[in-house]
Image 1 (cartoon, rainbow over the protein chains, first blue to last red):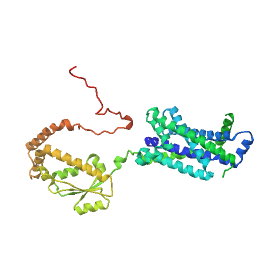
Image 2: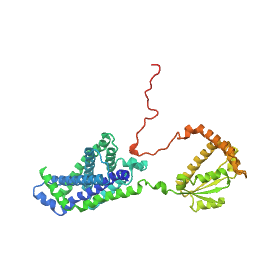
Image 3: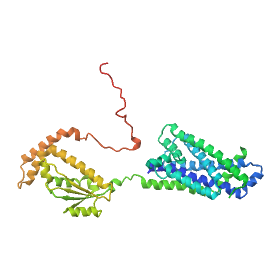
Image 4: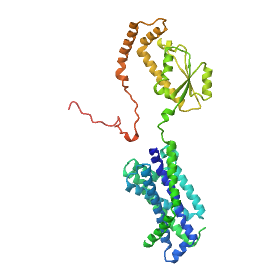
Length: 203
Length: 228
């Protein structure tokens, strides 16, 4: 059972971290509607700082959840997590990409409900193709070819490489891609969000 | 940067006061992974649980067909194989159609005599189309038995013929006759002993973690030149 758990759990963990991040990210709009952000702005804090703080908070919660899940599964299920530093790099790159894609989706969606629906669709799609529900190698070749490009597969592949003690580059390659793409998406998403908050177009 | 840190700290402290939503979200992947692992993990007791129902029509009812039937009742085969002896072909086919048997084998008339006379003969196998794996196991098993019986007959044909003749007689065979057959059988078996005891090709299952890759055959191997 342990081998199967170890094969399936990382993908499931990444999928649920996506949903946790989604819930935390949506809080920005709750705070906007509750005028918390207006009060902060009145206190001299810039909108840029507010948005960055929310993204860092989201990043921190993802880290905490991942850390708790890793420690718990290591102690209770004996999952052989290896190379803590590389694991941190892989998960951080995944979290950065997650922040980026959330910022972009919430920035461009007309309402938080629409953003919520889009993120659920995107995350579930990425989870199915990325091997969260079944071992990736068991998927048909066509789905594997598409799933290889999903964030969940890239993060999962990084962890799989660590489990199997592959060369560091194998887990570092997808992580670098995720970090670079995530940084670009986060930058673009934050700019869009800032413009929306400044214009007051929040449904 | 200090302002951002202050804002993050404030939010995280607020989250820490109400952690239950996050905890529930964290339990879900673990529960899902446990369920998936329980469902799809290979089970240790599966070897014992496999039960193949095999219908057999024995039209030969002689020495070899009796041996074949008794093989099915010994060792590992006895745990995993359940024989249903039928009287007619229609009865066997009906068992397959009713999904009470995974396969149906017909042992033809004069099987033993034909084999001892070196005449080719054939077994008939009906596979249950509603099942995928178990009929295939029967087919592969039967193929192995056919090869085994053919090779054994090639090796021990005179001795088996002798045993059969002894069984057909009404009187008890003499001790000398039995000893002769026994002794000649051992002599014949000694010729194949280096290949069969233990077998040259063996099947062994090991854990993936214990697997040590061996170099491929086509990989260059340093060979010393005997002339140098």
